Image (cartoon, rainbow, N blue to C red; front, side, top):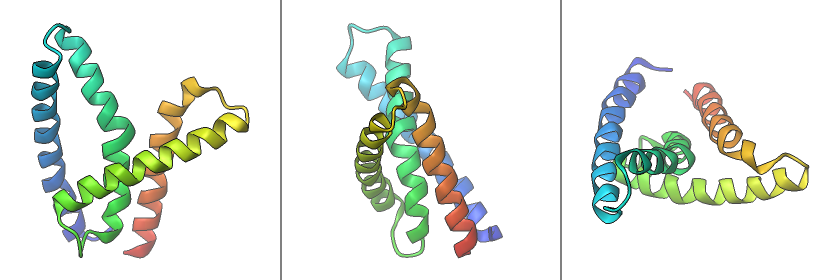
Length: 119
C-alpha cells in the first residue's frame, strides 16, 4: 500500500478509537443499570461485527468519500453482508457461534487484499 494511504489510515484509526470511547460513554449512559464490563463488551462487539469491517470495505472509495460517509455507509453495508453471509454459512452447516469470529476477519482480509491490488 502507498505511504499516503497508510498515514491516512493511521490518522483515521485514531478517530475510530475516539469514536469507540464516545460510543462506550453513550452506551453506559443509556444502559446505566449494567456494569462497565457489559458496556465495554457490547461496544466492542458492535464495532467488531459491523463498524470496523464495513469501514475497511469502504477504503476502496477513500479518495471520493469522507471519513463519516465511509463509516456510516460501511456499517450499513457490512450489516447486510454479515446478515446474508451468516445465513448462507448456517445453511452450509457452520455453527453460528463461529460467525462472529470468522466473518469480520474474512471481510477485513478480503478488503485488504482488494485494496492492495487496487493501489
